Image 1 (cartoon, rainbow, N blue to C red):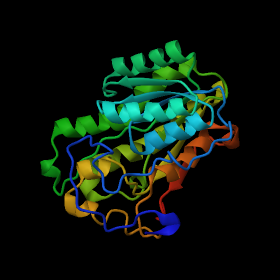
Image 2 (cartoon, helix red, strand yellow):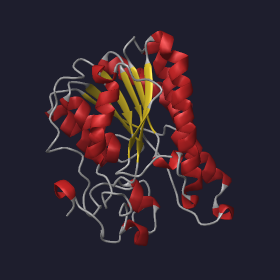
Image 3 (spheres, rainbow, N blue to C red):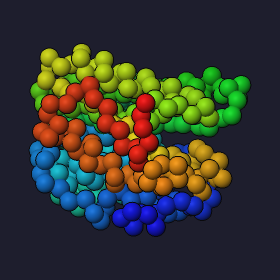
Length: 287
């Protein structure tokens, strides 16, 4: 075990079919279910979070609920994981809205925003967190269809959602995108994914300037290696066993360890921050 008792590599070699589920992971990720304590920093707010069934999105949903926000939980089709996130949100005394569907389609993104506003009354926080990746050693193995899916999930969807959400957002609202250390230190085997993460960082900066006069802040969090279902469902099993070992902390991060950054950017604590990217990388330097 590593610092604070968190698991360090080697992990058991493991493989799942995309998009992966939490229950099959060894060890099971820490989403802060038993550790995060809120301080009403988001009282009365409404958040829409994509990829909120598991991983970082789930940790953020739990933290936001314990900070006083109602949460719309968006995910593709991982219904069991999505309902578990909703359970934790409701246990915090907040409303949970579960909305499965494919965010690569603009029509679904519009429906997500409208459903959130209709059922929860507003949209104050948009967290664009859902992501798709695959690993390849040769560019010739990447199909156009998969390249398109990666871009539509990782960068088209944040555009679709921001476009739909901004008209409903009041001054003080916040858009938070999940980029990655891959945006600055791209790995060749994650060519498509890393390319989208670079685009997300630029999208964050440009959109921040575009909506500043509306009083809306736009920022991003850049995780390093984080132990989520995306890893065993998209990487070879041999790579999962040592995942995150090269960080200064000698381990992958846990989703719960990122929740505080998202709370900061959504709350008054981050009221002077826009166009920023916060690295949460376990000590890896973003050049």
